[in-house]
Image (cartoon, rainbow, N blue to C red; front, top):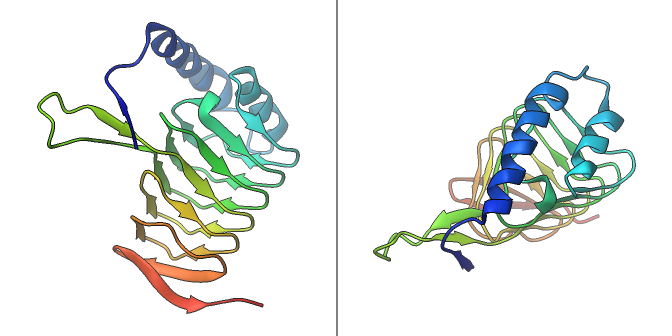
Length: 174
């Protein structure tokens, strides 16, 4: 994990600008306007692959730290708190009200600094509704994370993981 003592003025201004664009142009865009939302995200340096479906009620803290592969999907109610990079790989699905959190705090330090680490959701992985993924986690390719799970450690590919904390409950290799 990397320590962040404070965010730059440029970062703060960019987040204010993004928040304004999100509220006025992104959030209430018609449900089927995925190309429009992808364009808005790209204007803020997000890397969005062809065929992505990012819904209007998804909240993205810092588009410049978001990368989505082709045909990835981010559902309504998803919150991506991404001071560090979040990669949603090709064909991955992030279901309703999932929380991807790429930052925490060093609670042992007197100044309580922010600690950031990237999140990687592998190809054709599925994170089911209301799950939480914490900093530094990689969801393996083809992994299914069960609804309401809390993922504190990386998950192996082609498995079903569920619970709090999430553990492997089934291998689904084909």
